[in-house]
Length: 213
Image (tube, one colour):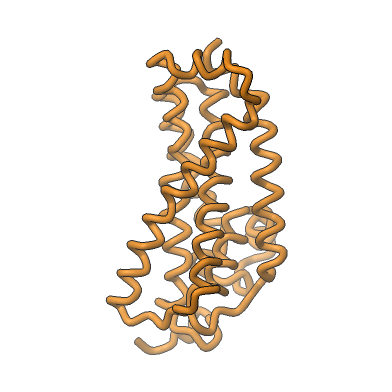
């Protein structure tokens, strides 16, 4: 597949450029609906039992976040298989693969925690599904998943730089495919995602009891 001249992707083909964005999209779309689990647990009476235990609320939230992160690894495995089938030049060294796995877990944990916070506010399955569907497309299209920041208008660049999905895509693009060029850098990508996760865990821990009220 020839390199596109319309979208500047450096030494990569546009398909190669897209693969990390597709992986991040898959992770996002699953994680953003993870919050419905807490509503199901409330309806089954499980959540009420968890809330009366001495376990910190933050530990309950973080446990769910890590569970969602591990689930996100299945998406990475599927996307890797598809990329191999399409002959995308991937990086198969142990370090980059472990890095990809780590950023998949971190991104999944962040967006699932955000999803849990939304579930704590809306508290019903119907409202939650509606809000989740409204959130996914803006998060995806205001990131650098399908086009580089360099061709975005200034207002969209500003949104992309505060969108945590942009930092996950940037990290995956550096680690996953050959010739991936950093926009923010792995250090900043990791810091932003980890800080975002920490803030969301604290917020969601405060909101968690609202689900049963």
